[in-house]
Length: 116
Image (cartoon, rainbow, N blue to C red; front, top):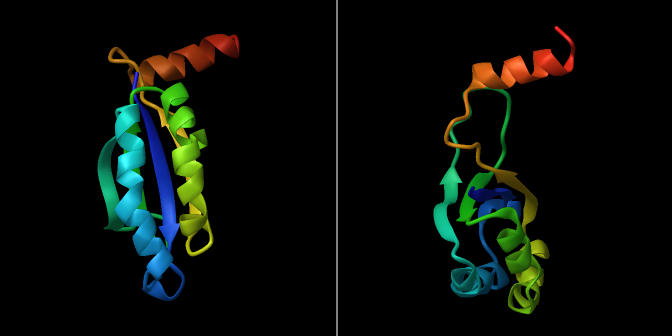
């Protein structure tokens, strides 16, 4: 089951710093050994409900443990200051649903847990 890293990215002043550009030039190489697929990078989001300042980054990993291993790797940790010292980020990991998942089935599981 795939795990997705989602980064809500904000660049102060809207212009990347030299350090941010160095990060971008090097980060992909750190993800390749972990089977990551870059799906979205710096997409300007289209807000249809609520608010969202900034852009989005979406990376697919084979699973959560692999994503965490990449994030904690020495190679990525060496690059991390180039990103976190020059951008504002909210990173989350989310697992994909199983192939047989349905929203109605999920609601039924909750009803069962609640004794309904």
